[in-house]
Image 1 (cartoon, one colour):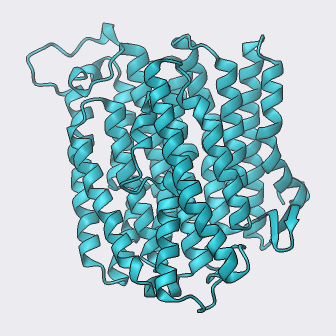
Image 2 (cartoon, one colour):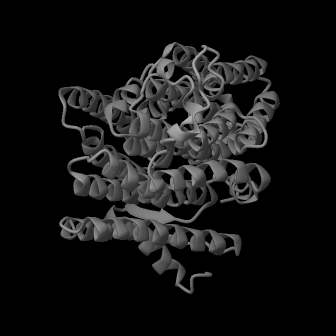
Length: 492
């Protein structure tokens, strides 16, 4: 391992570092500069640890780590495998970037309870690491719930009645789906298969009746509410009452990606692609995901509030990953996994830009943003890059993931879904590209060339925006790390 650490120690540190940072942040609540330095250093340290684990994986090293055995066959345990590392790399890379952005945002907006914000953020990242490296459904469920609970105070951070209402919707839907559907699916899997561990090819070994398999699959798909498949999607727009750094956490770093990741894990390692393609429910769940993609994009077109438009865009983009999981093809799985990274970098850029516009110009409605490109040229240029990535156009990382998703639909003979993917990309163009275009070319007769009125967001926010936008471009020219992991999922 390149960091000079024992592999087991490296994984333990990656799992524990965010949790260890939380009490340290609390102790530094009276010294904001030190508190924020610890946040940034913890994020950088976590990324270096995960990158070291990635290099060890490339060298052929494998590890299963057991923390606690609840009963025979049921344990809190972790493992290194390709999909886990892909998700962990994305989340750990974006923690320090989001923290840098949050420092500029929270200070510029003079937010209250900043220490609580950084503590809950660290706990959420710790839950994300635990979920990413989980070796079985039991471990995944534990950290899935911790992630929900730790992000609730972030959603309600403002403390207003509107924030509390949004928090109730957020917590209510995610807890109801996870306990009412996901936990039931896990118990049924345990009773039928006698095991919950993630295994390439699945754990049912052909001993699952089609009706029961279809029921279990539906319970998993709807129980993983963080994947935001309609009709269990309302929590995501409701959570937009949170500050923009929290929106970035929800949409790019942790929460929705945890849902998409969990769905991919269940498809590849609980059911297996061979069983999945034979289940009667797979087709109608695929069509439901396709409908979610198109409907969410159509709703996004109607939203004038920028964060609301981006929220519905995320629902549609999550549908892409759900389609990748349910296509039950190698190309679909690769496309879904790579879209975790592509969407993360693209969408976090868009949310960063939305927050920068709010901080610098106090604008939240798209109709009020005509001509602002002359005031915030760097921000709107980055918004354009993020939009291109979400649409799936070169030269952005989103082009690769959508390419493999279309290939997966062709391999599965799902021409209707391929058409839905292409139509939704056109809708992406319709609801995203007019924003930077009108910002630079308003065509409303007002003067826009006012260099003396240039008013970008604070420097930490601009640096974070530049890093995420650059990552979206870099993923097009250098997709190999994520492609290598995505193509190696079924091989561990």
